Image 1 (tube, helix red, strand yellow):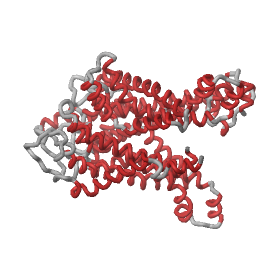
Image 2: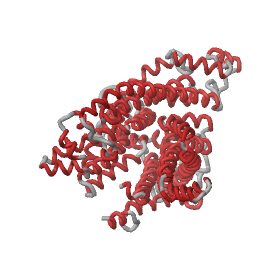
Image 3: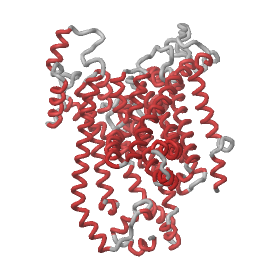
Image 4: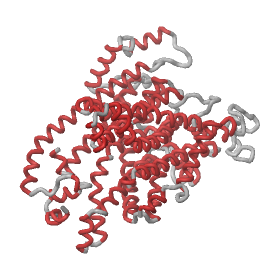
Length: 350
Length: 282
């Protein structure tokens, strides 16, 4: 197999075939004409695949929307329960205003039709702003934080994983694995608090609790990105260890390819698929982490609003944010699946 | 080579394994024996000794109400261990049975059951925890149910995958050919073969439940019981410390260290167990 790849490396299709990990377990090394054939079939299949995935995504959204609705109605206590009790007439008026006096099924249908029209309804807490407005205001902040953290994670994980795999079983490897275990184990709120205490309060290098220029983003980015970086580093290490043992690496070395080229040109591209594979769970981890990081660093993002919405029982805001999170997640997974096909032509046929 | 790998997994040859095992034992002991271990009583306030830094009388100092922090941290181990172990066990039972049924039945039932798991698996855990804990109440019992209802998915996936693999083993096929009943097949032949991965998943589930519980308590939507004499969550203790961090960082550091070290120790144990039970995975 390695030989056939060696012969065909100039052709695009076979280059991308090399990128798959554990290439031996799947059928590779088809002829060129055959590969064109594969591509033609895949276009039609691609559309049906896309439709199926979109349908599945819509199903997930519907399930989540319904579950959230049911759970919130089942939860004891209501949105207008205060420490100082409101008069029953006031509560009745409020419930009438927000249609909470209707039977649950009518509320559910109203809620679903609102979502279909892209309207998440009014917020019970923020009387001057609807849920749509709150989300439009806060989503960009959360998205920026998430992307920064993802970039940070990748930038940190790549050298760590590469060093660990290349110097396997040496002290460098053990140090990298140790750092990665630390990163996986440290909760966001502890890392965030420690960074604020150490870097902002003790050293005075950065200020915490603001969200204006790029310096205020450094600590939140590191806090949110640390755990994904640790996961990615462990993943890259194990993938690379496997890759370094493959025949084509030995072939490349035997040919006299420079060591830097063996690593950069032959080994590194094998990381694409495993990294893509964890992108879905990684997005979920970033979303979840953003609640806490936004809380600790007082960043005006969606997660912080979600937490206060939960405490306030602001139903429409809870449901709106939950759905936005789910949509992001479903979208990320779909995007990853499409990228798979782009990176690895064999997957397009499946 | 193989002897070196084997040696790595014994306590004598790996100080980290010994340390993490020791730490987990210590936390478990203080969870079980907090009233006997702790130097002060659980609710003991000393008005004159508010916000003291660590000293011989108070190893971890005192908090804003003059309570001994070491005592509070020791009692907090109860909450963390109960939530961690309890959640993991609930998830283990639900998930394993679900996965066994799904994998063993196969066909359309399997497809349907796994589609449900996929939906759950794709959602951010914390989101569902929060929504579920609203329903089941913000106490230990409610949190156990909420966390258990989310974490079972991992067990279901592992159990099903292992069953599908085990079904292909020759001895299982042989047992079936000899007319073994379905019940006997599952209990005697398949279950013993999938315990390894399940135990590993269990070990990793405990720290992630502890993490989730302390995080929720820290951001103020976890266990809502700050004056409990049974034990206060480490997350709530850390929240107390977080408010006073600028002037009295010790109130944050000790609970935070307890959470971090416990999670770290369990993760180390999990890694070792995985390597030990599944040498192929290395």
